[in-house]
Image (cartoon, rainbow, N blue to C red; front, side):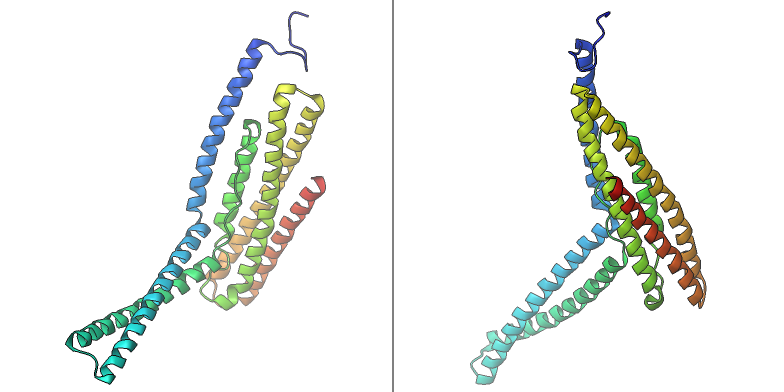
Length: 282
């Protein structure tokens, strides 16, 4: 009675306007989040390094092509000179081509060194972070926590294994990459669940279906639990990262490298267990 709208029944004009305002705000926020994600992706160190490596590879290919063309020109000019069929202009052109050929060789060598250096940087850096899709406002705070955890994990563990001695730190880099791969898989699953929940929330708002609302609440609890566990593992990663930095400052720290490797291996196992737990609940 009293004109109150019943669940599942027709909604009042004020409720319709309120729902439209919420949807409009959600669309504006989603556009803003998408733009921020595009900017973050452009600044991701791994993607920046990969773009620079691709540019270096193109420079190397361009210098190589120029060198091949100038080599062919010089060979043709030398053949004319040996046959006595070259005039003064042809000889002058040959000298110019020879000078340009030497310059191209220097360019090829420089481009090759640059390509090799940038390839090493790409190899040593951790892979790029998973994409962050826009979600509805009700779960935006928990996804912001996941964003912060992911950034903290990358900023901390991303420097593990970047010591001067590649042979000593190869094991640490391998475990670091394994840890990040497991963490990224868990993060991708959480973000996929968040996208599913966003779609369910949008579908539930106009209908107010009790079963759909209950399913949204269950999925929200699973996401909250997954993000909490992810955060605990990030704290463990901070401890492992501190140990690896102590290794980098120590001289002749073979045992320390082994201990840091074991701690990172345990962290990687924890990330894999988190992924299995998410898979079981999903």
